[in-house]
Length: 310
Length: 292
Image 1 (cartoon, rainbow over the protein chains, first blue to last red):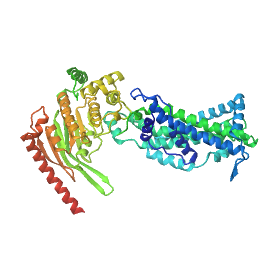
Image 2 (cartoon, rainbow over the protein chains, first blue to last red; image 1 turned 135 degrees about the horizontal axis):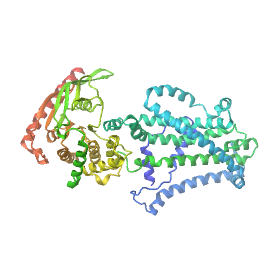
Image 3 (cartoon, each protein chain N blue to C red; image 1 turned 45 degrees about the horizontal axis):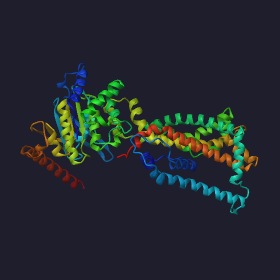
Image 4 (cartoon, rainbow over the protein chains, first blue to last red; image 1 turned 90 degrees about the vertical axis):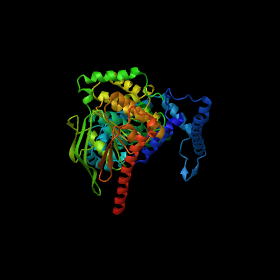
């Protein structure tokens, strides 16, 4: 199973990472964690002992790596480690854990998550539709590329936080402003990866389709889109990571709900354990949603998984 | 290798063809190619490049011809012009009386390699042409199965192309081109990337299929043995500019088998082609040396 996911990785186009480092790490982390999937029927069944020796050990190492960090954090906090990096005011994992249990038993915390999920869903949905359409246009038409690309190159490096004032000025509601900022974050990686994928289309396949009588619309549907799919999926996964990261910036605006607001508000109220809970929740939800995107797209890429490409 | 399966598969193919031909032309008259005074000139960074010069060629319906020549002699360009991928700079090309302006399913194309849609299964690849021609999914699937049987790959219909060997992929490519019942089959060095043993098997397999359909075949190759073994006529081309320099009739008996490869007649034809190509290659070298 492990070797299979490696093959799939090698076969997919290298994703264009957004210039922001967060998106890069989002891409890397999704690559590093194999997505659970059903092995196709033709795949020989791997004996459990072999699985334990290879994949099992690797998961063990990963878990252990996290535990080491937790133990270090606990010790550093309880002993007030202060060696350039200061742990004196950082709540220990045990304190954060206790606070988390309190949050989980209440209702407020879920409401925050729900609000954030809703915003990400709307913003991401818009980004997928618009991003893929723009990407196809740019990949297929030099005109479209020349018109759209300058905007993308100019706007892409602007961090989400910098959009807050304009978003408030331009859009009627706070909700719309937050969704706009989240949407922008997700949009760029999706556009660029779609463009890249569409531009990579193998010319021989287009010629083959034309000689078989395919119209331009059929070529788009049967040749260009499926060929660009590995790259598009990479863009969708990166876009989801960036969407969560941008959401936090957007929710600084909100005076009501949202996990970003929760984190920011905890900071102004000096509730340190809650800050950490907010951070970890965003990280966890971001990773979870990225995994969801990847497994939702898996059926579209199943042709890649079987055997190596020659 | 179980190339051609039982007779009922062939009958099924012919049945399909008969159904199709009710509305169309009579079978034996389809596939007439007429190339008249064709030049193909490409604009390159170093100025215009004449890929094909003053090509004149007539191919009769049901004829199997090979375009033979060293690489860069314009044989693929000429074929691409017949396919409709390249527009002649001068002159015109007509197939069955209609001037070629764009690619179409009447001229089936088999490419060198890697031209199957990797995201479609073997069956979906072959069914693609019929689907584009407006067949229902069920009809297209049935046509695809028939043609996969014809090339001996019925058992692989659900496989993806990347799980097949190079030879198998090319057989799918042939089945895919034939599934549109083309009057002309254009093949651009289809076996060039295969090992020698597989190549011979593929050549025999192709001749068997052709015997069944008897459509016109234009086969591009730089392999003299292949050209002599397969064709009714060998059209020899020379490089820079690409010109037709000889048109050699191959009157070897059919069906052709591997034993033919060592016969005296085969050797004589091979020698004839070899001399022509050697002379042309030498000329090309001398030109390059003068230029350099």
